[in-house]
Amino acid sequence: MIQFCIMSGHEGRLQPAKKIYFTLMGGLELTMPTLAKQILASRQQSADGGPPPVQSHFFLTIMGGVEIRLPTLAEEFLDLREMIRGGVLTIGDWDRCLAQLGRSNVSISSFTLMGGFEESRPPAESDEIDSLALQRHLGNISESSGRVLQLGVGQRESERWAVVRQAVVVSA
View 1 (spheres, rainbow, N blue to C red):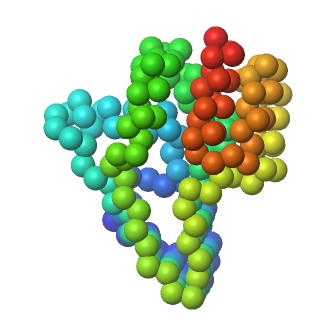
View 2 (tube, rainbow, N blue to C red; view 1 turned 30 degrees about the vertical axis):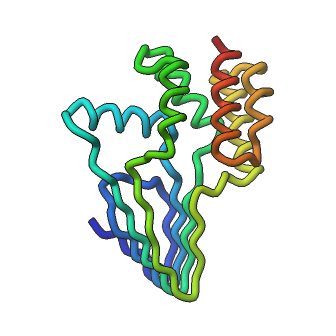
């Protein structure tokens, strides 16, 4: 499937169904699925038999910008906590999946001409703080888990996932 973004902007989620992204003089901002959702999708594909297929995404960017961001800590925390509460995943499973993360079945490649391409960028600190504040206000994140999650603001992938894991353990 092809997604075009010509002299405009698009913000959305990185979907496994979309394979080619073409950006011409525009901006494309995508958010990766949470790690818990990636684990669930990988398990479902493996349950169908055989190794899961490689999901390849190609980004062709000409005089534009593409940014693929990580989900917020609040999103990561809520998805992981719900999977654990639902019995779909345990903390031990989470740890094993993190160890296998380097062997991901997602392949991202790009060709950029007079533009910019950024992959796995953490969300802006203001977005992280706003997301945590909103979820704490709604009662979805406890005070103690929120304090732990604040430690992950501005961190890269492995540090973020360690903070999310610790926040889930604190909330249990």
